[in-house]
Amino acid sequence: MTKVLILDFGSQYTQLIARKIRELGVYSEILPFSTPLAAIRKAKPAALVLSGGPQSVYGKNAPHPDKGIFELGVPILGICYGVQLMAHFLGGEVVASKEREYGFASLRVLDRSGLLARVKDREQVWMSHGDRLERVPAGFRLTGSTANTRAAVIEDSDRKFYGVQFHPEVIHTKEGRKVLANFLFREAGLEGDWTIASFVDRKVREIRKTVGDGKVICGLSGGVDSLVTSLLLHKAVGRRLTCIFIDNGLLRKGQYEALMEAFRHKFALKVVGIDASDMFLDKLRGVVSPERKRKTIGRLFIHLFEREAMRLGGAEFLAQGTIYPDVIESNPVKGPSSVIKSHHNVGGLPKGLTFKLVEPLRELFKDEVRALALELGVDADFIHQHPFPGPGLAVRLIGEVNRESLEILRAADDIVLQEVHDAGIYGKLWQAFAVLLPVRSVGVMGDRRTYHRVVVIRLVQSTDGMTANWYPVPAKILGRMSTRIVNEVRGVNRVVYDVTGKPPGTIEWE
Image (cartoon, rainbow, N blue to C red; front, side, top):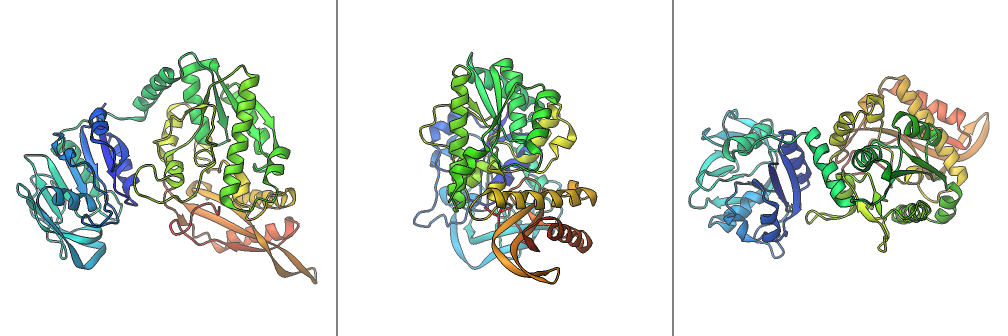
């Protein structure tokens, strides 16, 4: 299978490069910029992409790869920082610009024989850089420019080296898909042989090779990620897979009972149900820090999995529905990026883990997981349900987790979902939920003063969970939600609406 490796230099758009290349039918993986040359060579990439990044190539701690990547004999595309790095290594000159170029620019196409074939002249591109390429390296020709960037596109068709100063992977670059396609197919001569069906076949083979004759347990959360993981495992190892669904007391109203029914009958999985709500609430008593919540929940999940594995006769493998956004937000494993928050199944795992992890979805984005679920025969209604965090309502209840607060939040959250469904907007949203704040406000109910809790309504739209926009919900729908929550949920007298995107916020509040 054709593979493109993306070396990550810390760009906020690196994940988009991987997604766009996969959408074009070519399998891609992201590696840290510091990956040893031997490891890159062993991976046998058909091409390399050098991502953007926030630093200067000549900076004191600038991320530099092994210069030997330019001697591998494979086509290379440098994007933003990546093109500057390429020029810096190959004899060009990069200097600091007097003015940082950030935002929209118009691309002047000077040569359509290569990377810019069929690209419209004067089309919009997205710029984000402070340095500029002053002198083009020998062997390159200049094929595109903007008003502020003379060397916006450079090409060396003999060595198959290409560079663009703009970001072709973002939606703001109108002809970006054509630029990437030209690099992959026209210039690098690759084949688009990656599909979700081929991913299934490859992962099943990998799982069988990894697990051998061993037993596997898979933690089900009720979401599509863990379900798809379990279906892949079931396809690979059959009855040697036991799924575990834990009622941690942090689920939505009626969620545990409904999902147990679906897992056992609709999907024919071997599922063990465990009621551990008292145990989780006891461990969370007094815990306020979001990171401590996630890690406490993660450790307790593992403890219960280990206990169940012993009861089942020693399963040595633990399968999890970890997906790529979980990894990116929990650990700077791909490039010099920052930790945003620990996901309970990534940053929350104990160091002395006795299981060997199996995470077949670790490099997939959410939209790819949903496409995979469809390939595996999962109903569309289940596939397109809104994501629900592994730590459940614990990360939607700000402050200490206790039964009283959970009852309030669970009731408010149920009303939000009811109204979203009734209004016919569920399918337009990525997530819809309620958040309970650890503050009280003064109110008047029935001519009496009240001093009750505050509920936040959060409705967002997104494609993959990496970025999100708040949804401009009609005032009538929002008013109905507010009225019902205040009237029907005892202990709440104020409702507010969250109008924060991601970034700067995250989708969940904790």
